[in-house]
Amino acid sequence: METPKPTLQPQVIVAMKGHPGTGKSTIAAAIATALRCPLIDKDDIRDATLSLSSTATSSALNDLSYAAMWRVASTQLRTGLSVVLDSPLSQRGHLDSVLRIAGGSHRVVIVECRPSDEAEWRRRVEMRGSEGHKPATWRDMELLLEGYGGCTEYDVGETLIEFMLML
Image 1 (cartoon, rainbow, N blue to C red):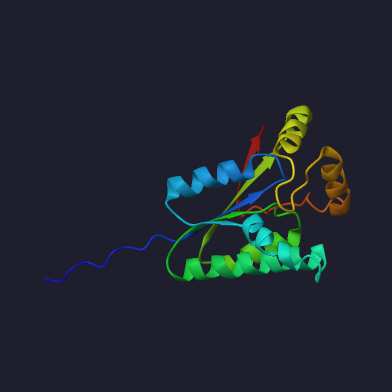
Image 2: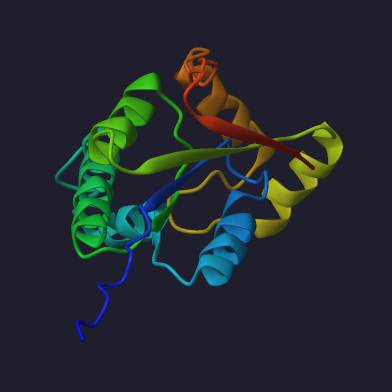
Protein backbone atom coordinates (compact mmCIF):
# COMPACT_ATOMS: atom_id res chain seq x y z
CA MET A 1 0.00 0.00 0.00
CA GLU A 2 1.35 3.40 -1.00
CA THR A 3 1.73 6.09 1.65
CA PRO A 4 -0.30 9.15 0.69
CA LYS A 5 1.74 12.26 0.05
CA PRO A 6 1.04 15.13 2.42
CA THR A 7 -0.95 17.92 0.89
CA LEU A 8 1.06 21.12 1.02
CA GLN A 9 -0.88 24.22 1.87
CA PRO A 10 0.03 27.32 -0.11
CA GLN A 11 2.29 29.60 1.86
CA VAL A 12 0.95 32.91 3.06
CA ILE A 13 2.79 36.21 3.12
CA VAL A 14 1.35 38.41 5.84
CA ALA A 15 2.66 41.92 5.21
CA MET A 16 2.16 44.59 7.83
CA LYS A 17 1.49 48.17 6.70
CA GLY A 18 1.40 51.35 8.76
CA HIS A 19 3.37 54.10 10.44
CA PRO A 20 5.70 53.58 13.40
CA GLY A 21 3.89 53.37 16.73
CA THR A 22 0.61 52.02 15.36
CA GLY A 23 1.00 48.48 16.77
CA LYS A 24 2.41 46.69 13.72
CA SER A 25 5.17 44.86 15.56
CA THR A 26 2.91 43.71 18.38
CA ILE A 27 0.32 42.38 15.95
CA ALA A 28 2.98 40.88 13.65
CA ALA A 29 4.48 38.92 16.55
CA ALA A 30 1.04 37.61 17.54
CA ILE A 31 0.28 36.53 13.96
CA ALA A 32 3.67 34.83 13.52
CA THR A 33 3.19 32.99 16.81
CA ALA A 34 -0.33 31.89 15.87
CA LEU A 35 0.77 30.73 12.40
CA ARG A 36 4.02 29.26 13.77
CA CYS A 37 6.01 30.91 11.01
CA PRO A 38 9.02 33.23 10.77
CA LEU A 39 8.64 36.91 11.58
CA ILE A 40 10.96 39.04 9.45
CA ASP A 41 11.27 42.53 10.88
CA LYS A 42 12.73 45.21 8.61
CA ASP A 43 13.70 47.23 11.68
CA ASP A 44 15.89 44.38 12.95
CA ILE A 45 17.78 44.45 9.67
CA ARG A 46 17.92 48.26 9.61
CA ASP A 47 19.22 48.40 13.19
CA ALA A 48 21.98 45.95 12.21
CA THR A 49 23.19 48.57 9.69
CA LEU A 50 23.56 51.39 12.25
CA SER A 51 27.35 50.96 12.28
CA LEU A 52 27.32 51.87 8.56
CA SER A 53 25.57 55.20 9.18
CA SER A 54 28.81 57.17 8.80
CA THR A 55 29.50 55.71 5.35
CA ALA A 56 26.04 55.41 3.78
CA THR A 57 22.91 57.53 3.62
CA SER A 58 19.88 56.66 5.70
CA SER A 59 17.94 56.13 2.48
CA ALA A 60 20.53 53.68 1.15
CA LEU A 61 20.52 51.74 4.42
CA ASN A 62 16.73 51.63 4.41
CA ASP A 63 16.75 50.31 0.83
CA LEU A 64 19.33 47.71 1.85
CA SER A 65 17.13 46.66 4.77
CA TYR A 66 14.14 46.13 2.51
CA ALA A 67 16.24 44.21 -0.03
CA ALA A 68 17.50 41.91 2.73
CA MET A 69 13.97 41.41 4.05
CA TRP A 70 12.69 40.44 0.58
CA ARG A 71 15.61 37.98 0.18
CA VAL A 72 15.03 36.32 3.54
CA ALA A 73 11.28 36.09 2.86
CA SER A 74 11.90 34.47 -0.53
CA THR A 75 14.18 31.89 1.06
CA GLN A 76 11.61 31.04 3.73
CA LEU A 77 8.87 30.64 1.11
CA ARG A 78 11.12 28.34 -0.96
CA THR A 79 11.52 26.11 2.10
CA GLY A 80 7.74 25.83 2.40
CA LEU A 81 7.17 28.30 5.22
CA SER A 82 4.72 31.15 5.41
CA VAL A 83 6.16 34.47 6.59
CA VAL A 84 5.09 37.60 8.43
CA LEU A 85 6.80 40.76 7.19
CA ASP A 86 6.95 43.59 9.69
CA SER A 87 7.64 46.89 7.93
CA PRO A 88 5.80 50.15 7.26
CA LEU A 89 5.22 49.08 3.63
CA SER A 90 5.26 52.82 3.07
CA GLN A 91 5.59 52.84 -0.71
CA ARG A 92 3.67 51.16 -3.49
CA GLY A 93 7.02 49.73 -4.67
CA HIS A 94 7.26 47.80 -1.39
CA LEU A 95 3.88 46.20 -2.04
CA ASP A 96 5.03 45.41 -5.58
CA SER A 97 8.03 43.60 -4.09
CA VAL A 98 5.74 41.52 -1.86
CA LEU A 99 3.60 40.62 -4.89
CA ARG A 100 6.73 39.74 -6.91
CA ILE A 101 7.89 37.42 -4.12
CA ALA A 102 4.43 35.83 -3.98
CA GLY A 103 4.69 35.18 -7.70
CA GLY A 104 1.04 34.21 -8.01
CA SER A 105 1.57 30.98 -6.05
CA HIS A 106 1.42 32.36 -2.51
CA ARG A 107 -1.45 34.14 -0.82
CA VAL A 108 -0.81 37.71 0.34
CA VAL A 109 -2.57 39.26 3.30
CA ILE A 110 -2.01 42.93 4.09
CA VAL A 111 -2.62 43.95 7.70
CA GLU A 112 -2.79 47.73 7.87
CA CYS A 113 -2.56 49.46 11.22
CA ARG A 114 -3.91 53.00 11.29
CA PRO A 115 -4.15 55.31 14.26
CA SER A 116 -7.68 56.38 15.12
CA ASP A 117 -6.54 58.35 18.15
CA GLU A 118 -3.66 60.72 17.38
CA ALA A 119 -3.06 61.48 21.06
CA GLU A 120 -2.60 57.77 21.84
CA TRP A 121 -0.39 57.33 18.79
CA ARG A 122 1.74 60.28 19.87
CA ARG A 123 2.00 58.85 23.40
CA ARG A 124 3.20 55.52 22.02
CA VAL A 125 5.86 57.14 19.83
CA GLU A 126 7.17 59.35 22.60
CA MET A 127 7.01 56.61 25.25
CA ARG A 128 9.28 54.37 23.23
CA GLY A 129 11.93 57.09 22.88
CA SER A 130 15.04 56.51 20.84
CA GLU A 131 15.15 52.90 19.60
CA GLY A 132 17.75 52.53 16.87
CA HIS A 133 16.62 54.48 13.83
CA LYS A 134 12.92 54.93 14.75
CA PRO A 135 11.33 58.33 15.41
CA ALA A 136 12.07 59.30 19.02
CA THR A 137 9.75 62.31 19.26
CA TRP A 138 6.47 63.38 17.75
CA ARG A 139 8.36 66.00 15.72
CA ASP A 140 10.55 63.19 14.30
CA MET A 141 7.33 61.41 13.31
CA GLU A 142 5.97 64.53 11.62
CA LEU A 143 9.20 64.90 9.64
CA LEU A 144 9.05 61.23 8.63
CA LEU A 145 5.47 61.61 7.41
CA GLU A 146 6.40 64.76 5.47
CA GLY A 147 9.23 62.79 3.86
CA TYR A 148 6.77 60.12 2.74
CA GLY A 149 5.00 62.80 0.73
CA GLY A 150 1.71 60.95 0.92
CA CYS A 151 3.11 57.82 -0.72
CA THR A 152 1.74 55.65 2.11
CA GLU A 153 -1.75 56.00 0.66
CA TYR A 154 -2.16 53.49 -2.15
CA ASP A 155 -4.69 50.89 -3.11
CA VAL A 156 -3.58 47.35 -2.29
CA GLY A 157 -5.80 45.90 -5.01
CA GLU A 158 -8.87 43.74 -5.16
CA THR A 159 -6.99 40.44 -5.17
CA LEU A 160 -5.52 41.06 -1.73
CA ILE A 161 -7.15 40.73 1.63
CA GLU A 162 -6.70 43.87 3.68
CA PHE A 163 -7.41 44.15 7.38
CA MET A 164 -7.63 47.60 8.91
CA LEU A 165 -6.71 47.72 12.56
CA MET A 166 -7.27 50.90 14.49
CA LEU A 167 -5.61 51.99 17.73
